[in-house]
Image 1 (cartoon, rainbow, N blue to C red):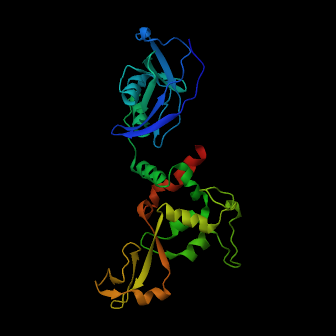
Image 2 (tube, rainbow, N blue to C red):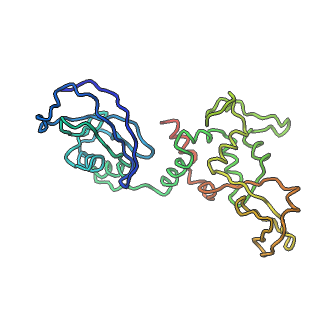
Length: 287
């Protein structure tokens, strides 16, 4: 016998065992008197994914023990349902707490059923970290802009650029007329904004917020005459040249210096992020 589905509000939790969800069970359409405490019922839970984990796993009965041990800490208490996860409870239970199933481990378990040993590749791990840095797949929308991808590709991790260069490339400015060809992206949503249309400077500011680029200063050493770059965090009125070690006052140079930006973090790698950006865009379209 089954009963109609009901929606409940869950509370997310973080503990030493990972991410979980706790919720109050809805009113039961049957007797739940304490005298019936030996009776059992299966609560079928359907919920959204949480970060890089899954609350309702795929229908694979062979993984019932794994589902129960990981999500409910009782290997015999879980039943894989089409479209949900069933948990065996006493009819008198009023609450339920489930922990999510990590995607990488779940995928490995699925392959293991068929005798295949699988683990995330280095490229897969990097892409996963890239998506997390951007705040999830939705945060990767900005990579749909061809100028953004070109900007990341053009400047190596040891090369800096100024804001004007970034906006010109993101806006795909015509070399002859200097008119921006950004119309295809004006309605692209990357984050909440007050104005209806997206502009190249909005995309660049978003990349700075997400740590794709970091700001600094490009300075010239008065002794060895070589240019070098220093991050905003490390910039001081008296700075040491990274090449010859000479300490000099940078204040006189600030008058004709603009902020210089470089790729940072994962985007500071010189391996094209192992294809992580196009993969993230593809996953966004398929999600």
